[in-house]
Each structure stands twice: as C-alpha cells, then as structure tokens.
Image (cartoon, rainbow, N blue to C red):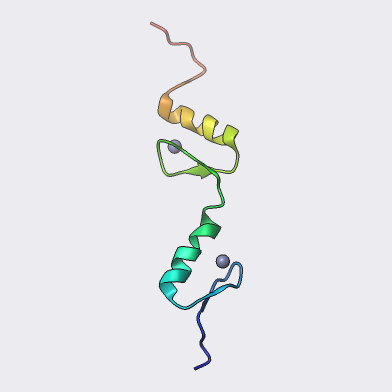
Length: 66
Ligand SMILES: [Zn+2]
Ligand SMILES: [Zn+2]
C-alpha cells in the first residue's frame, strides 16, 4: 500500500495512526501561549490575556466603590 501514514497538513510530518496525527495537530492549534485562567480562550500576548480576564474579574475602569 502506498499509504504510509497520516500526514499533517501544517508541517507535513507523517504519523502511523490517525490518533497520533490528531494528537500532533494540537501543537499547531495551541500556538497561543497565554491561556485565560477563567475560560478556555488563549492569547498570543500576555497583555491581551490580562485585558480579557477583566471580563471575568470584573475589574472595570469605573470606580464603583460603595
Ligand atoms: Zn504538524
Ligand atoms: Zn476568559
């Protein structure tokens, strides 16, 4: 058979099983280094996460100190 393995479309590596390819493909989808601690979003820059996390922590610009 010609089909040696399952080729990754991103880096053209081949894997003997589709399961391994699926697992490998995560390295391409997980390029974002800074995950949000509150939800499953992730960002490429730390400042972006910090800005995003405000929606979870409720740190608004408004000083609503009662
Ligand atoms: Zn790959
Ligand atoms: Zn989040």
